[in-house]
Image (cartoon, rainbow, N blue to C red; front, side, top):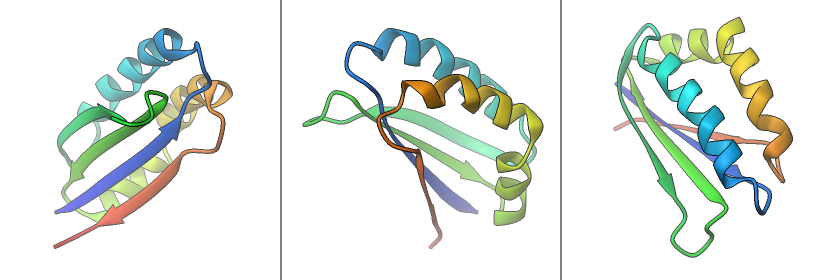
Length: 93
């Protein structure tokens, strides 16, 4: 099992638009091969910071989802709302 942390920083005043698109991405991720669990968090000190924590069976399943056309199309909706590109960190025990 691996843990994936996706860090995003949204532009000011774009929170509601971001949340709408992010919900679509989360729903699609739940149906992805190897998905175990996930949660979405907001920065405590930075209200425009978003962290998505996803647990997947393995790195291959994550890479499959990461490169999928479905994810790329959904992330293309969110990308214009970000002040920096999303940062993805893979972790394991």
